[in-house]
Length: 343
Image 1: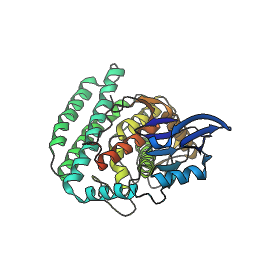
Image 2 (image 1 turned 90 degrees about the horizontal axis):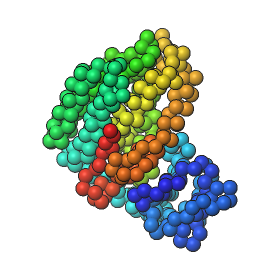
Image 3 (image 1 turned 180 degrees about the vertical axis):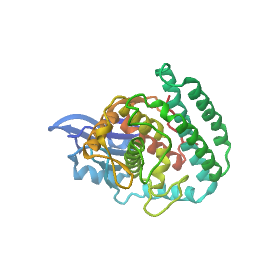
């Protein structure tokens, strides 16, 4: 378990939460492993199978402590809210910001600053780690173009300007993406982004990774009380988790793209894991999906030092921490949303 930003993350699959006096008690095999004063918590995110006692759920509902349940793999299951109106007030702030073009633009800037910054450092990391195997000069040029886009994003005044800058930056980033694929070049190579359907193995892997990341972001937003369907950069549309798509923008390069590159370069995904449909679409086989998901779960358990908090956390918690920071920004606890800047 881990406590950050007054939020308790219960990550051990067999943990059970109970209430003892004024404390949250965490047990495994009927053995107490930790306890936390309930009054110090704003929310509890539980990723265990056993769950929590009715007494604890009632106490959380009564005192306005958000208690959210997820599967160990991160799928959102339920949230205990009771009569607390905290989530309602938070969502009202979210809806107001979404309806305000200026506020939407301000929040969208944070997501895109993180995306372009992280895209740049994906390219830079390749020049550092594989200087003999990648076109260093070309990747450095593309990295410089991405760096030059950052102040323009900061100065943009409308969502239309931001979308134009994001599109240009994405093209520059993907112009260098193929150079990062160092193994299995006969099968895995990249020319351009294609989706619905993906038309080559790399696009199939990217689309699957983006789907998993969007699911994690939607679950994280649900867990902190935000509405994943009401976004800022991505405008609300029936059936689309627009805010989850906003939140994942800054995480795409480091959580999804680098993961796909690693799967190819380390040969955990190979040609046998992909199949071409009669329509021309390329999909993962059942075995390929299992291999991809197994690698995804291993990746989520690896640790990284969060650039804003300065604490080491598993990669799998990054969307949840960013969702918490976004909720704090909307409540006015922080002046601006702090993007996830990876380097």
